[in-house]
Image (cartoon, rainbow, N blue to C red; front, side, top):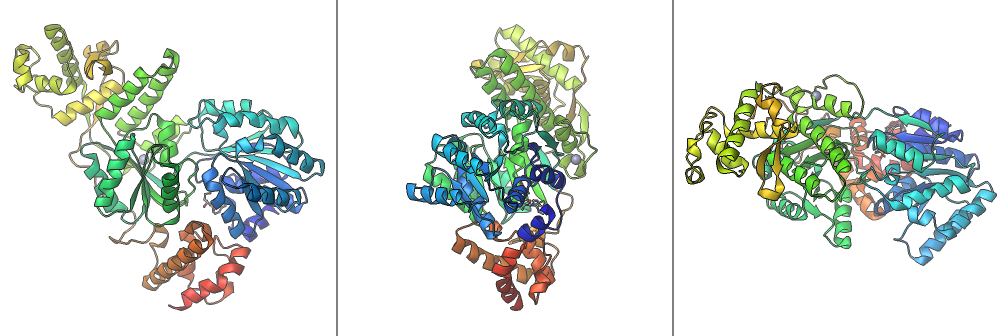
Length: 616
Ligand code: ADP
Ligand code: ZN
């Protein structure tokens, strides 16, 4: 039966990866913990069991989710597929709430989405009690289950109270889902939600369609603009910045360059934030410039790029944020610019945080792992996956695989740099910042060098063969391996550390990627993309007539989406429209078997689609 539901309701031919096993397990009443990367297809893992069990007369599935802003669209998507669904959260008024409750008690709802704080109210629990008594409480799905863990980045105290589901409704199966892979978080979820006897389904975390690239930060604004204009004109994307101020500035810069860019951060009015999120979800080609406040649960499938202008705190954060690109499985980019200042800033934030030393040590370890990813000259994906405990081979779809960087031995430069820092400190009794140290090393007689008499040092000019870019690379690397530190309390001056000695003595080799003066250009575009107004990757292989049909279908979809007050992708994905355009259907039979057209959508939209296509 699950496979029939997949085809009939959702219009998909096959289950993906572990979906089938998960669905079978849950339909049969087993508990499950599902770890799957973003875009892996978690929703179907509980939606199909919900439908199957409802058809068996077992009643409603309650979906607990913290993503209130998205519930409307999620429920809308189920309605489009002909599934009875509803949500309960603070956006409903009293009357609407009562209406949903009445439908719930009458058994008219297959999937009920609810915020965690709602689920644990006495009122709601008593309604569940009565459903349970009548055997009409089928399943609990706990989405974004990592919210229960303090180790995760989205801790929600309300999630802790969800143990009531287990205690009060012992016989009702539960499925918990998350895209956070980290072993610590996983153990925490199991313990906090009492899922000890649940079967665990752990997927590979690879996202093969995402191309990873990390470039050296020079002039980030220009670099970003060039990246978007070259690769992603007209595409939807997310640009992450650290501060609200940067977000505002960058959104303005992109708008000035003619892009449809909107800011999003916690300092904006809730209404403005909601409006910007809606536009991002509903319109084509909007670029959201945001702090990390934006993104959890954004299920827009056609985000074509995620760009980081500032470095995240750790690999978990980086992977989760970049994971928002390409949920539809089509080619997408994860692009990050990073530089010495990022390293300094992140170190400082850790040093200055009020947390205990043990916690800080853990944070530094996580930061170091990200730094070494950024400095790596081998496959980025191999390193990312290794971080999550997976073994893989070079991917052929990251910057380092596509354009292997030159590597140079920076050991000599590192030793010269460290001894300069040592001499300066000895000579003047104080420490200096990166710029001045590099001037001494490169033998430049600046005003400051003269003022402090640093031209007399034995290390003055001993590094004249190195460029400033090379030396910055050396410093980043030294900071990454803990052989150098930056004192935030004292004007970002450079300090030797316990780890400096081994480098000075030549016991540690320092290998570096060659600094390139321009961001590495793509040798060849992976999709021969015509410049402006380029079609989405799904449509890249269509002939001219096909392109015209695709464009017309998109325009039609836009109208339907507006009428239904839903994002366009909820009606049909780009890939579905592209498949229709390619078939040039003349009859309803021609539409049968197109991925993404279930029976309800065929009935509702089939005739319209044929009419649109007939015009060509
Ligand atoms: P997740 O919640 O794991 O990030 P979703 O449940 O949003 O992922 O699914 C990602 C996309 O993949 C959705 O657009 C969904 O429709 C699609 N999808 C999921 N399972 C399948 C499948 N078996 N066949 C085709 N498309 C699928
Ligand atoms: Zn690679």
